[in-house]
Length: 291
Image (tube, rainbow, N blue to C red; front, side):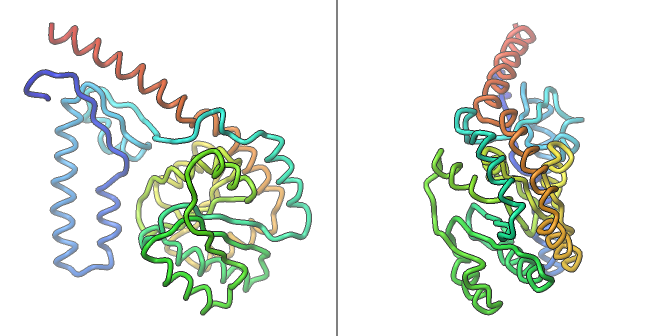
């Protein structure tokens, strides 16, 4: 496309360099060296692309920092699936947050694939540690995958039957957003950098995020003020923060309102309207330059 002088759009969804290096930390020295070489080659390749693309769509501030200085025209872009019409009414969120004043457990939910790097086992272990410290807190897991049997065994081993429930796969759509709205927060503790769309689906349901301190979760905490960040390197402190959020129901309600307020900005129709404008501008600019 570059050689043919065609207008080009380059898209990167996750900071692959960070993700690869984080996943390689527990591997052998030779594997870490191989990862370092490959990740550096990947980084240089992306630098080459963004320097030539008429428009580069980079997901999140981390990618903007890494590649923005090399880009001809970079825009921060978040890919989401729900539409503005599918956001649950604020009244639904307020009714749920009012119920937090009762003695009911705080209801957490994970929604996604059950694969190792999503860290659902870590979520279950943190939930167990928080409950051992008196937190009234439960977790439902929506989704399926290769780790399900191991996760179910972990739940039994930690005596969490009835406190952690596996609901299986769900069809994506407005019904899932409404289902998520019954919970109090999204719980996400990945082992490496990730940019899941379920964070924004949670926003559409008025759910704040409780998540490990990968860059994308930290960015969400700063951008929307709708997240509680847990330190991956300190499980004790992570468990204590879970305990505090389970007891501070007013904070959880405030975070839920912030999540719902962010939902409109991040709706798919809003993002794709921005993308359409950026693409048309890039094509027009490229046509003028190449004329």
